[in-house]
Image (cartoon, rainbow, N blue to C red; front, side, top):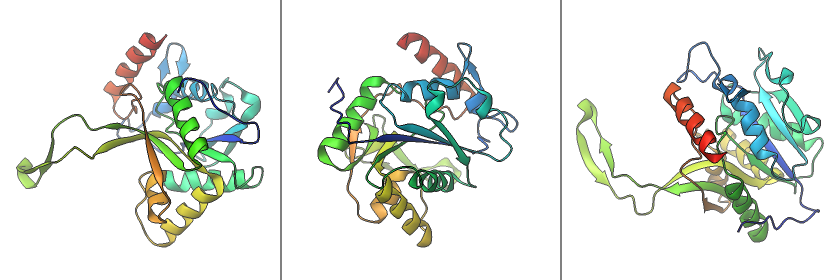
Length: 237
């Protein structure tokens, strides 16, 4: 699929949880405000997502964040801000509750890592088309390529893990607003560890499809990831 099979009665919203400390990247600097090609990582990410016909996007930011609202983000007229939470899942839930005041429970929501500025337009289109055409939640992912080892204490290998059915989850992850909010609320109430939106949906037995993405949709987690993102964005241009 290289064209968006989008109907006007489907509204698309994006949530960007951006309240985390990013301590693996730096103890003092937030990765979303690092510069690439004279723009912050956040600006690149928002620009990519605005290639879709969004009704709007919500940034869930920290209480002390005095940068996000000052940036010249693309389609600033569609930008919304809410307070983030202690963990990613709390930020997403806060943003869903914010959206519930201005959007329909049947609207589609894409949750995307703010530190994934390299997501391609073709991947975004494939994801949206799949979710809308099947009326099911969907996420981007790629098959695991490398041999996986289960490692125990002292870095000793316990066994080799069968990778034939394993996929590496990416974002965006897309679902109906009402369904995703209910899934997260239920998972939190049940004390389930939520690492991404799909894990909350899985908890309430909501089917989630994996749409094959691309390996260049990297997440900036460590400082050397920033250098790789710079190379990827330069090559994509």
